[in-house]
Image (tube, rainbow, N blue to C red; front, top):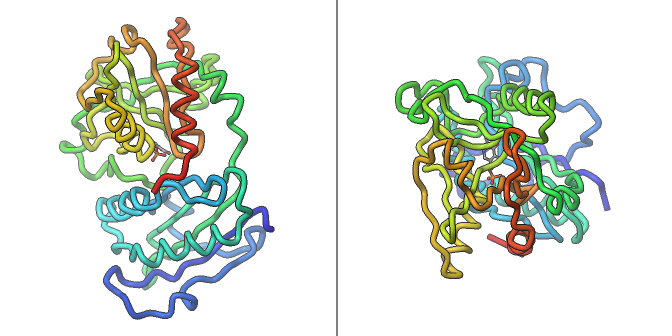
Length: 295
Ligand code: PLP
């Protein structure tokens, strides 16, 4: 069984039904050159992506990830992806992977080569980092200013907020700043004082027995893991809410989690140098649910 699977995808129009699927997917060696120098994904970060987990042979939340890929493409004015084609590519990759362990499967749709006729698309699956320890131990977090207000998406749609674009350089810079400050991760706060998200995760707070997360205003990415967890919490009788969360509420929360597709749920242990109450049992329960097969 391979350690990685990489497929180049020749995108077909969103409404195409009658096409030779096999002819549009080509497996390539991840170590060999596959992209052209003029590729706008590498030159300008001009494209969108998704990362989903494959756990014990099951691709998690494929539907929500594909819907978000479609939404990101719409925001970026890229050609609408044919979701049946992407789903088939995911199925092809998963069937080539071992049916145990955790894998990160990345989907990329870029604007292609400048003035080129079509977007470029590919899928790459590789073994996920081992997050067992951090899921148990949790993360120390610092808050960092995102540099815009929580309603910035409406004021400046060209910022493409709410789309999962390839331009993650600022998110990575924020993580480096968090590390410089002695923390593991960061929670972005808006310039007008509201909780937003992590650079690669959504934020969930618990006050008493109510779970809350920032309203998906368009300035943050609507996380598939957060949505799935909220559905699970609601289905098991817990109260969940979306709202604008003032930064001060991070201090009054009974527990805080960062959640994302591959690392899953990690508890926040420290916030800006101050200890935060951690609910290890609930974090374990969250991760048991998140590791179970989810569509
Ligand atoms: N917010 C941002 C900015 C992200 O990059 C991610 C995931 O990478 C998330 C939230 C969490 O999204 P998901 O749960 O779909 O992985």
